[in-house]
Length: 446
Image (cartoon, rainbow, N blue to C red):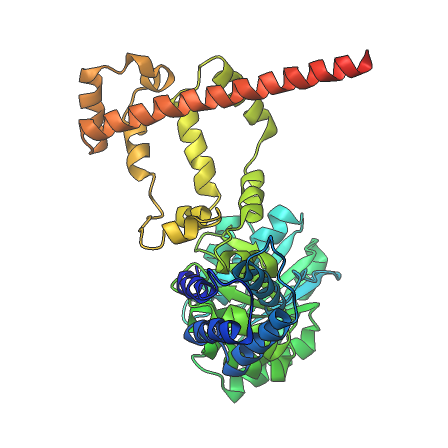
């Protein structure tokens, strides 16, 4: 995500390395590179120019402390301006109402239907809502079937009427159905076109007027760059939508849409899609995105994803097993599954400060753990619970059964032993620290 933009910003700030102070000359050279980086990322020209001018104005107006290098100061200013450019603060979605109605808009292929499912899943699992999905795309072949498949995968009901070709009528029937059956949020998936046209705009404007949604969201493919911004402008002029959703942000995106859409339409980015799975949806945090663009990682999001998978009771049991040196391959497999649930592996690693640059040219597949899982699944239950019984002959059998070789099995066994030792060492250190803190507390009481 944004690797190219990150590299160009890094190059821009290198201009100030070794400089004793910020001057009009060296800051101009740096900002020339910053502006070029933004334009290469397909950011609107006026937005890029205004952004660079604001940084220059703030940079030249500040004294550089002896403890802070000019490059560091410019990074700080740029970070603040990037955050502001993308909206400043995260913006909550409005799903209030009886029921709350959320209307989707956007071009065909932008990911509206998939996002509708992700949003329903988000509201159901994280907000405790009972959502109803509504199929109002009566033109695209199999659009209704697609939404039904999505709804079934997340356990959310889908309302559709294959006999009716009027989206307004379908949406109104769906809201009446929601009121009668206890659904408190209605998500209306509408039709899109390959390009903005008058018929589509008129139709969705009529749907909006008829159902008076509490929230209208514009869904756009982040990989389309400046085209996404232009399309957003056209939709906003007719719909006056409430927020933007950027899909496919995990793809080969240059970042232009994320960086300039707020400045152009003055509407916040509310969500970003980061994959095909139904839980691959994140609230958009401008500050965290600025962190990632400038190579600072995103530890907060990483911790939040980990907490979502955290089971306190299971963690206590695991800790006890580690302390007793009983951590086995079943536990190892469970931990891998927890990591996989957190999302794309390369995306997760990119949240660690400094790792984005290190992983620039490294290809990490989504199924990076596949060969490890194959090896573990080729073990017998006894071997998984008691790895010490795995001798040379067993390793040959496991290699043959997993489609790997003995070298890979040996490598996994070694990694497993090292992981077990490290986890036990960390657990023991934590226990010793708790004991030490307890003794300190007793001394203070005396």
